[in-house]
Image (tube, rainbow, N blue to C red; front, side, top):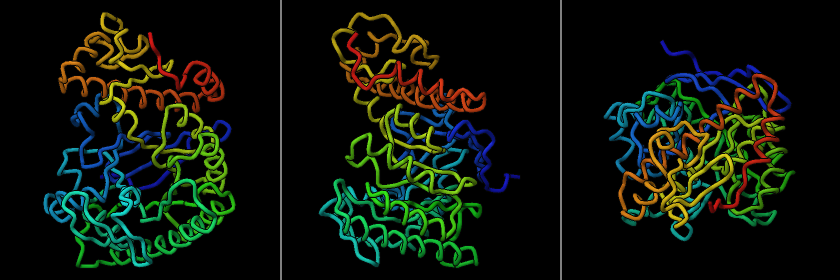
Length: 386
């Protein structure tokens, strides 16, 4: 029998913490990174690949799965886990950020978000209640409330309006979860142990972040996300907002930084007490030939690697680095072989997941500050050219 959902902090080193998140589909050791499988698949990889690189939890997206193949179809197939063949935990984003990205194709009202599908132009209305219903049918282990994400830079008035609307929508999401728990016959739950996370907004205004955090915590959620970042703000500003916001969230609940980021962003956020992360960078960059190493990024299509027999990263133990050279990976890209995307993605996800493993070990042994300093000394955001 699966353990009941819950979160326990097992070790703390400064603000950094190691924990264990129990879900109906297994436990997740935190801090943890979630590979992004937006449409129910992590691009270029199979479930076996994900197991090989050490993934324990993945992310899928409500907006995309609602449009295709449809949440009701997935529910009839036994829920998202069965449909995609992934036995571990899944977090589903509510779709708010994807709809935010639609620009002129969407309109936000108090009722919800009116939008046109990017697939066929059909009109839809995503309400907070519908976002919960879709995620209930999908049967994810962690569902997210529908929130309003706004672009950077934002005026104080726009940010306040988004905070207030997000709080009202969060309340409606919470109420809908209670209705489903009481047995609403209109929605067949695919996972009765599903958790619900609230989202803190407020753009880059510390006082609005504090207000949003207080209102979200007051509603009472299983975990709390820091949203509305990685939308164009300076890195130092993001770090400042993460530090400020994480300190306002309950110690006994998981904290999730949405959509960030570079490897050094993750290290910095862990230092402020963040537990969960997701980002498309390791998979998207892999398909565009940017590979992460302990020294920084390299662009494998660079001519300098044409006869380079070294692995991507001599310190890496992933399948790609154990078996293939930089020269071969460059050849795969130039030949437009899809194997190249798979090998690159295996490496990048291994790098991210192994970095989080090393972070967990450092926190457990009380050496996180040294790990953070060493990582900052060696990792660079500049491209490696040789």
